[in-house]
Amino acid sequence: MDDAWIRAIVALPFGLGVGSFMTVAVHRLPRGESVVRPRSRCPSCGAEIGARDNIPVLSWLLLRGKCRRCGARISIEYPLVELATAVLVVSAAIRYPSPWHAVLVGLLLGLMPALALIDLRHRIIPNRLMYPSLVLFPVLIVFARLIGEAADPARAGIGLLLYGGILFLVAVVSGGMGMGDVKLAALIGLVLGALGLRFVGVAAGAAVLFGGLGGLVALAMGRGRKSAIPFGPYLAAGAVIAGLWGEEITSWYIGRFL
Image (cartoon, rainbow, N blue to C red; front, side, top):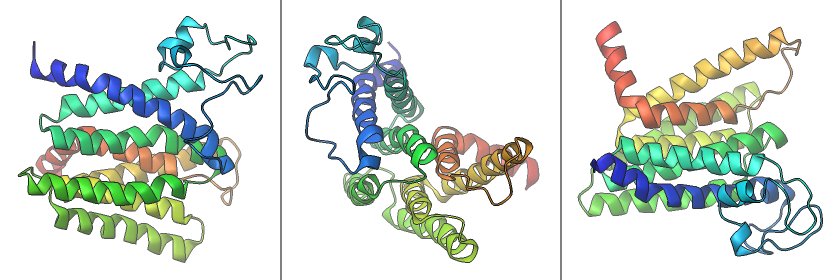
């Protein structure tokens, strides 16, 4: 069996597990609730969801999207977030032969669907996801470096300062961008910067491109220029593009324009 398929098979349950946790984060963090306690419950009848009904994606399919206790509909959002997260984690595992690169990029990309959804719905990027991530990822990067992996803590710091710093200046000058966007950009710059600053450049360029297109679509739909448009989903999309295809995009750009 090809090594990429082995990595994908190993990464799949991990990605589904991360996705399951992210569905809890999407539902609870904007409400200020704990993501640990209480255990998952049916939003309609309050019945605790047992282990057999809490298997990512599969349980929703077997239950046909309904609560076992009361029969109320369970939103398709849950399996979609789980599946999207798993796809991104598995894609990172396929893309990066190095286990540590796959872990770094996979964990980063695994956050993106939930963060984008929360920002779209509530116009926030929760600190309770950002702060732990900004602690965990530097530890992983330094550890990877210590065991000889090609993860550069210095470039990670530069990426954090560049991407986060630029958005901080934009937020201060324009007043139209929140500090949550700044923290998310800093996190993306930190992780992708550990692989190479070119990845950060691709992430920023893609986010600006997607944001511009999104703004044009919003104007075409009749929204005013001063309407609040969350930028988190565009940052997340840029991170995905850079994390999975940053090397190829950089090579294409250099060959085409430089």
